[in-house]
Image (cartoon, rainbow, N blue to C red; front, side, top):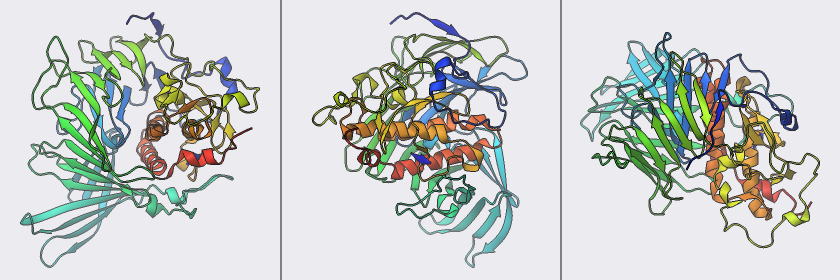
Length: 547
């Protein structure tokens, strides 16, 4: 972007994600001290001291940002217990006890209440609420009308009630527009504003996120409003469908760049097949997710296995291979006790009495130490050597090395061999460690930070995450320049998705609890922007073939 088996165990209480190591001086650390919110990187997750919650997040499907979150909290010094989705929200509990579903990156995990003279919207991730006060009301001659509400920050809600002739009843819909003010940022010298495809600045009105709300019929709960659309005029809108139980059934993603419109369909188990001998379906739980891209046939991209008690135990992506991408075990309380994830690594977790902060023991000793030495990093080289280029087309191989097929193995540097000394991104760039505001580490390049977007919107420091995203595009760009190390051109969505996760989970938590909802809105907007307009080929084409 531009300013846009058995293994030996290693016991650790906290990973060196928090602390610089001796080799970290080789990295271009760009973070500034955010609000003083201590965030502890603990094994596969992180502990936020201001909320007292230990969180682990997984993203299963890049398209539609479909994933889930496991949280543990100790209240008043009592036994730390897993967090559960609100009972009134079946759409968030589809992965079973201890997990909360996150569709569209968790942005639709919201609750709307229409009150007397006001509308209250609550961000369920942080528990923060925004109150919209009634500003005007207009009645229609035939019944119904329009009520307009506004929050102190300028965000607006419009409630419209009109006759639905097909249903033979009055119907109410609500539109909520969050005033992100991304088009009115005070930029530092050399920074960029958001621009359209022609380079013209985008207004805040074009960038503000708009939520479309619909009240679902037939739910056995007072919480019946659901987000059915989310997006902006600059980058398009995603639509969400629900089944009769109020669970997400479809997500339709608009066409973006070279990617056609995508339809994600969420399937739920109708019977329990799990046994003591084999994991399987559990009635009512999320069974699998399929994706239809353009005119192609549906493809299963996520499948879940549960035990007879309904606990999530495995996640598999049949489109890549039959082996699990993640496996889980739980203690007697329902907290994760074992995680073996391609994203997060292998870990054993144990919780002391009255504490939500686990002791994390790595079962993956080959995983590089965050901020530590990088295999192949040479600070003295000035460009690729002639022998590092390959003849002919290399696009048929998904990655080189082949074990580095997943974007996170490079960008989070989770495998020692997954590092490229150079990447093609508007010139040959040398990747190095970058530290995020939460003090977590990623690998990125030094270029221009966030492309056609502010580096630090409203003071949130997105620079290192953007540097990481640039690295991902550069790895894909290496395919076009036949450089010896590369990531498949089909992994762009994964790079974009990991960018969102890095902003949402490893940048925004460094800021105060009251600011995080806005930061996460920005994270989603930046993801929409790179998904719609980002193209690794552009940076590759601007890179000379030789040095």
